[in-house]
Length: 191
Image (cartoon, rainbow, N blue to C red; front, side, top):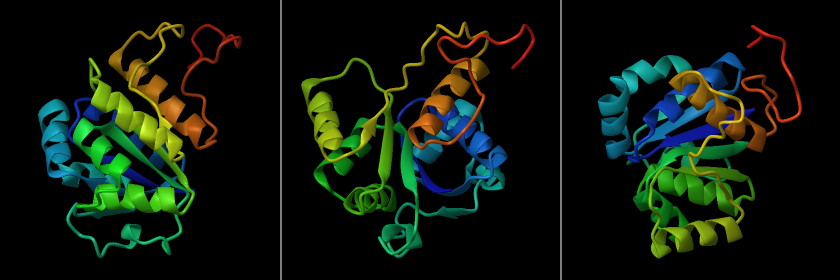
């Protein structure tokens, strides 16, 4: 499995960092692209910079490098997740405005009929936000707001991150045991 992970400037960078760590553990090849604001939010919220994330990815690209392999449909990729997805990035993707590598890569994933998952992190949502999400959904994207379920009784922020990472992995049919599934009981102490 080969995925692009896009990180834009919405709050919730911890979801992206956790997902990258899990994808590495599962042996998924990841290609990272971050907007400038995405880099700033990772630094502000997680205390990490691009270099810190390199241990979890096969390749990282500059957001303005439109010559990068992931900007082309000929680069074989299974899909892309934008986590977190700012409303600016959501608007760019939903309108096909490919002014940077993140939005261009998402555009390519859609045009090639591959899976695109966007994890918007904003509240409340305006009519404009909802319209952009609807347009992306019509284009085939999976809209997965960062709203974890609490029926698994999470005990920590790491548990909440695992819930969202598990949802993303499910969208790509990647097997995992990050969280309990409804109707399945685990033995005490199992995790």
